Image 1 (cartoon, chains in turn yellow, purple):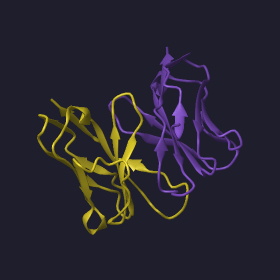
Image 2 (cartoon, chains in turn cyan, brown; image 1 turned 45 degrees about the vertical axis):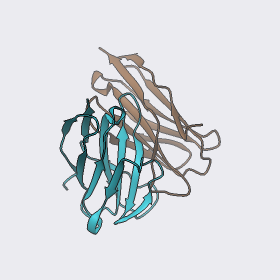
Image 3 (tube, chains in turn purple, cyan; image 1 turned 90 degrees about the vertical axis):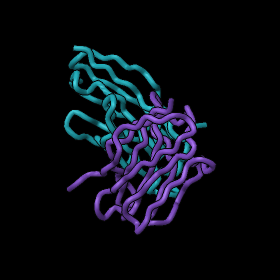
Length: 115
Length: 112
């Protein structure tokens, strides 16, 4: 079974530039998550999709971050314009939404450096 | 108050010893609990999940859950240098069993 795929693996941009990340979840996983992990901290949920609908985006900085999940499969996360404090690893995860206790599987992440 | 709290460590143990990692959570109605291991520069990977009070064993790992006290722990027996990593505790809240709250993680160093 293929895992969660993310690209790119690394990205360096200047502040005020824009950047986009892509995620392809495990086949059949209805729930998709984007997490931000700053060095030394645990993952922080940015947005959660159920199929192509947003379940939770309460911690997404909507003035600069946007995300979409077209057709309930792939997802993109965009930052425009980027700030220095956006430097982090952006993790995509997916899970089956069939019962409580279903684990989330993570992709390899995209390490973003804003200079 | 954070939903999930962990001691950031580092926790240092000698090879062969038992490592004990602890986690507390604030949502009393939480139902599912997970321990993820994250090596430096890598993504989190699940090592244990637990849903009922008591102990759950899987090889050298034992997860312990006490819902009355709102804590969950992970014991690693016969610790190996390869166990050196950050261990993240994650919790599903009652109102959204597909949401994961993560703690900040405990860094474990196993010294040869």
